Image (tube, rainbow, N blue to C red; front, side):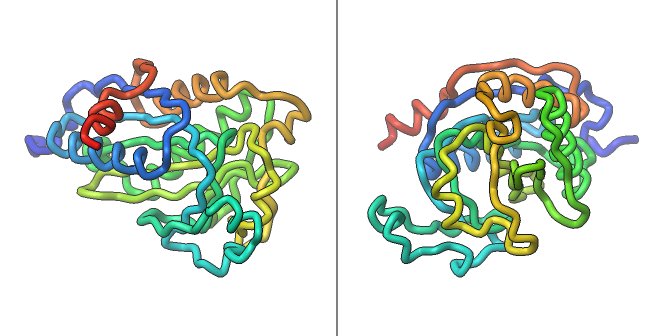
Length: 242
């Protein structure tokens, strides 16, 4: 008999995918934390996907270091960008418009995922999305990310709280690439960051990428359907609380 606290025999709920446009990093992190708390209280295995872009910011994960950022750069000083330490895996990363942040909120135990299996499914979904866009992406054994002909296309860094995964991946669709040289996001291989636009030698539409990812993440996480929404009601609640 199954443990009633882990309803493995229950139907898998539909994935809820939210397209959020541009959201400040701190506000999006607060949203994720509230969704983690909600997932913990619900206990029904609901997966939520958040897709957004962030204004310029540099974050440093548990595997990164301030030495990976050219913090004394006049560009960073002029734009008043200081690295922010965050409780996710991965290294130092630059976030900016044109980069798609992908944040799945996934109750791991309910879906019987180990952290490693979850990351494998996540990366596979991103690679399959790129294949659908006629872009060849590949993983490197022992490292979390997606690489193309021109450089690293996506970086991963997750966190787990109360058994629920959050944070996620950052896929460079069409960002301005100038500031990426100020952050070493691949301290092992020192591969430069690149973008889907560079791989295609032409424009790549953000809505197309988001929609393709929603479908393939739903498949990768073993769910049979997803619902799409624009915006998230909690963001409005958070604005009213300020």
